Image (cartoon, rainbow, N blue to C red; front, side):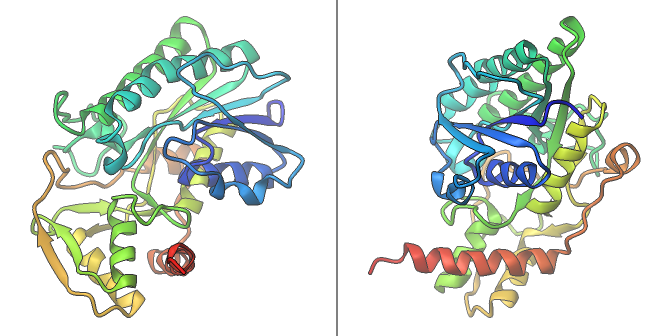
Length: 318
């Protein structure tokens, strides 16, 4: 194990805040960096009382000076939902390019292990199913989703270049659809959208005919996989995601059942370049990291529903 201090970029976001918390629970001090463009300090307010946690508001597209020793740099900074990166296309590309370089150079300066949070979106609308790490993907480089897809693909290439040309200890994790507490109700992704609609009595809006699939993984399992990769010597890329595949129509109905909602399912237009299928081949994670999901979909969704119920009550005007 390296020096027990980590830098987490994008640490006040949904996934980043859970990663910060899990690292702290393992005895690793955390410096959380975020410009709060899509993250929020509400996600980390419960961590600020811990003396081994520190938050620094900063823009990673400029060089960052971090005093003291650092053993790990986790680079999660980026808009992650289509609703966000379609509104912030230039910023998404900038943090995926210059932001990734600055995070890599920070890891290099500190002699730290670097972990890039990449995404299943590098596979695009896949022609191979399920998707192994050896698959190169089917991505539209000029489509509306390209700002996120190509930013992550560039980030992977830059990480590999630092590893090979500068001998940086760097790894890549490809994260599949993750859900759980602290997702914004207006996030725009399927699960928070369905939950918000079900809990407020709105129609559950399923895009297309609802036959497109996703593999959903609870954030607790995803974070455990990210840390397992960091503590290993494996360079990746490694898929971290659940092999549980479900259609969007069935997911909407399941959430309706679990919430006891009377909302009906309504079909709307499907976005351009929306992937038809998505499921990871997790053989590598199982063999190299000893990782596989533990939290069942029903268990994870029920915990997420409880959080969303409280969040929607909190956000409701007096």
